[in-house]
Length: 255
Ligand SMILES: Nc1ncnc2c1ncn2[C@@H]1O[C@H](COP(=O)(O)OP(=O)(O)OP(=O)(O)O)[C@@H](O)[C@H]1O
Image (tube, rainbow, N blue to C red; front, side):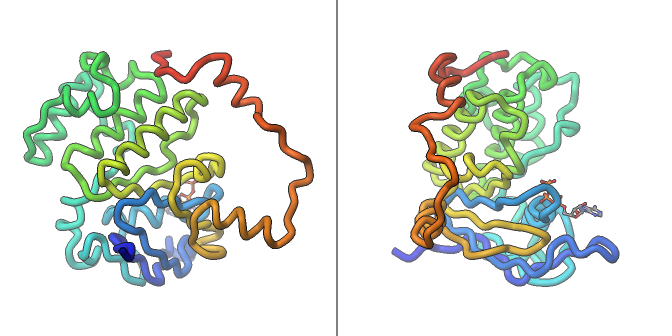
């Protein structure tokens, strides 16, 4: 069966005053995939994401999300997407369970906080405040809040920045699980190892453009190797991170 586009971005541009941050970007995200926008700091990933999320106006181009145009049907789009809040959005005096109740109220949805926390393995932190969580737990909680309205698509902007290797791997498992349960995931990252193991397809963004094709990580790598590219050093069968994980285990950490 042909893959169905759930997001179509066509010739998108965004100027901040005289500065062109996004310079004619086009891509499709297929239903049910983990799609990665990869690129260095300042490439235009967040700007592109925020326009798709209807949080920022575009300068020109077309963006269709779930069949709706960002220009004319932003409210319909907001109902079918899940977006991570910045940390400042979490009221400091409420615990995780109370925060979930608050978000449910904003969406007009009745969900059990424990059920939402269960999805991200945080039921034991239900009575904790957001600021008391570790980096990985904070990310997991913020992912739980994106799932409250049973969205068709969630957007994760650099979800593993600053996390330790276990927390990153556990977050990758969680993101795959969300995809396997039928939610499309759009993620930005500048970690190529992350994109390689996590994303079904990726686009490389640099200087406001998509450079090269949009393809699976495997196909990109195979094409590069077939072109005669060789790494300078022969890689070993494991790396230092493998040693670290082997020695310290892969279980959830509370630290
Ligand atoms: N509100 C704004 N006003 C002016 N310039 C902005 C604004 N937001 C972003 N920019 C600029 O637009 C460019 C793209 O920024 P953007 O945040 O989209 O990049 P990014 O790829 O997400 O980078 P990062 O990984 O650092 O978040 C950068 O040069 C940035 O300084």
